[in-house]
Length: 483
Image (cartoon, rainbow, N blue to C red; front, side, top):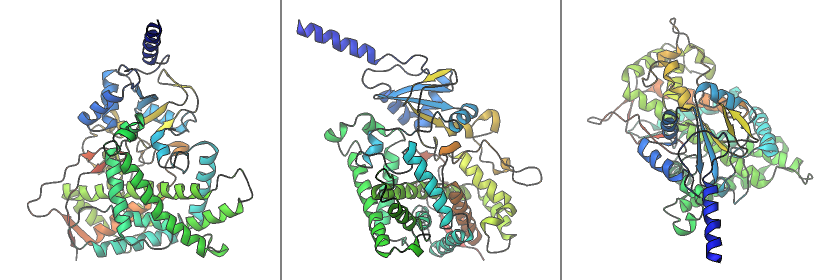
């Protein structure tokens, strides 16, 4: 009798677990307990990333909104400019997902800037924006720091190398702390190696580890759990030492020197407030978020700029010509006089889906979009790649053509459909810093070097390796000094 009742309960739970919410977007059939996890994993490997899965399912179900479920987590993909703009600029999706993978980096808490929301996110985003301006973001002082890094970078690039990923994070770090991080610092090199490995193993949905957290007990290496734990530990140790040094040397006069000093000042000012969100651990996680978001994304875009210079030497020649016609040194304020350089950067950001989704969102309440009902706490991916490769708008989206951002007179044309830093209140808070860094590094390198392939080398692939950040495959280039 008990076995019979237990069987009825299990069957009922299984059937109930397969039922989709009312008016939920179309998508694959759900498997009890696992949802669409295995279908998406299989398609992602076959097609080349999560954004390709959304593209395939959108075409299959003839809908720009696709409904999935990863484990128990309701997940929706949104494609196309109109729906993307509606989703990103409204207040329905101001939240961030709250799941195992995200909490893993903070010992089970919701901390930092990238993956928090509500009061904590609002307070710290406001503080970061205000403080970046205070310490020099957007001023000539910050530009001078980036320029200095770019000039030093050129002095190290007189030999064959394979990427810039170990150099640009040092420039981003200077916005966080004024003291120098040496490029040959073994800790930094190890962090960057782990960062790239982690990015390649997990997509923004957190992979199987997020959907089946119990895998960390059965297969900690295979699931990537040990990789994430090791990376988080080394990253925290790297910046914890820097924070300790700032505490030991803090004075009120230094509080506007860099972000860490400013954070310590705010932390002390609010120390009497029992409800303050300015804690030591929150400070550490915010600094880590800024370093990760700024360092990896910026270096990946610059890697791709250099890659396209050897894939398309005709474009490199035009870049050289425009730079040569300009007086030295070239500053951020000179960008209006270098429209083709700007167009090349914009085309790289359009052509390559490095941040295909711009960060997952969470529905803060039930809402409707595209004729479908999205339940509260659903994780939503807005597919920016679908905006950047919309054939109806771009005509030839699969062609790398910087001239699409220039008018007949060669002047730069603004485009509201280029969204490398997303849109709305949750757009990247450091987009100005990223634009400045990419521009100055690219110009300084191309002003001093001609880029070419080693003799006999194949032209590098423009296909990216999918992950949390889509990155180029390893490639070799030669930097030859220009006269």
